[in-house]
Length: 134
Image (cartoon, rainbow, N blue to C red; front, side, top):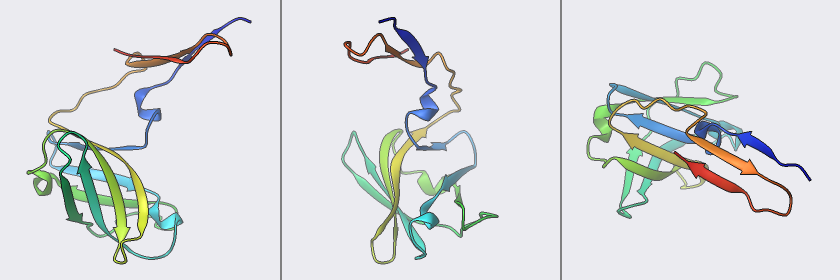
């Protein structure tokens, strides 16, 4: 059986939010309103390296289509205490019901990603998937 090479940009591997400290604001697009109609109230972050938790109140939803997706724009000064790194995030309502979850990256500068950063090679059905990160 012949193999093939599947190239996947890093952005497609996870639904990830990014806080870029080189800008004044961070824009988060999520689909939490599709889960239920209750209003989301907080963004809870868990730092995967330090095991510390942080909670932030969500700003007003500025989405032009709130029944399709939600848009939250944060002033980056709110995140000044966060160390750079990878976080798990959970968006909850006032009853602490989970509305959305995923990964969040805090970075100090804009880093462009390209299709060459990550690739996955599937040689055959008998071989394991091999992933490489540059």
